Length: 241
Length: 150
Image 1: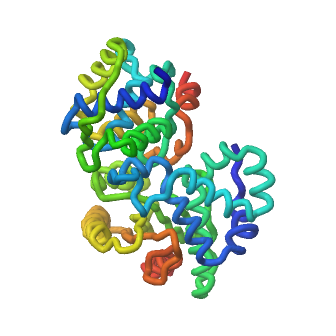
Image 2: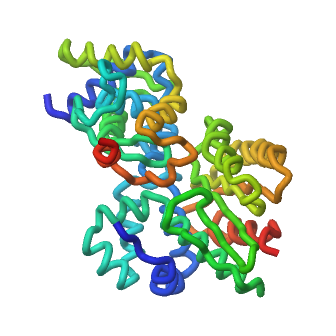
Image 3: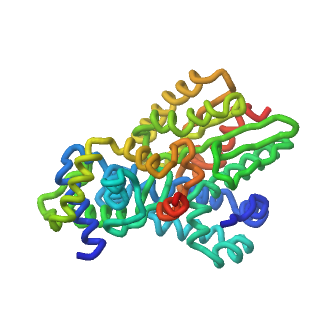
């Protein structure tokens, strides 16, 4: 099934959303139905930081319908299949992150970067290229906790970095965790996990490869747990200069 | 017994039989997938389904919304207790026909000692998907993957 192009997504939807809408869509895009598997059991079976599957679907479609093309050609034509591919796959989060980075770079006067092959769902998630030869890659892992993270990074990230050789010279791995309010203990545990993986990634390579760990909340927050803060942190890694 | 009730009773049986080895929801999900699609004679994943729950490939591997709903419903009903590993409450009675029970026992004997993460990776590999290549298959149904493989 064909998916909306990045340019349609950006012009008809992303550029018209406010920061809160962009953040909410990014938050929902990061955690597919299987995220539930990693969440701890609670009395009502879902912790506060994780949306239920129907709420997530309704919220994502509600926002996506603001683009006429996406509504007419994809949601109305074949809503379920489109949602599965676009939102339960990685295309939606890739589009959002690429759009946010592109705009932030433009605002900083760093020009010439174009997103490449975002809809293909291949490693890494976001590839930005500046002609003739500058490439920056970002891989996002929307995670619930840090259990088995070492094996997961080895199997899903390091294996691909190794196969890519010198190609992934400017690379950033983003470990992103959902959080609710008043979760200091959980966030501290996640941040400890981050230091371990930053060390592993740095140790495994001599290239410009970095790791960022951050949390994200459903509501756009001013305390740093948001899409805009994440993008600022990625760009400040100096991978684009 | 309808599909939902059967699924719920199998989940209760898995928790009861595996005890501390059940870990959490991930391991139940992967064992339910193997019960659904693993052919012990052919020693591979096949399209034939035992219970009828549909599985898709998501970030944490094979996943069924129907199995998830059954676990959530058992938790809400108080039949599964909070915490890790998952435990049954005293009110949880398990009702399974002997034929189904022996199928579940086969799954437990072969896969019950394997951790949730290893089952996640192992079930994907049985479908021909390596963890480093998983992104390409996100959102795809297991049925479609098996149909393409034939």
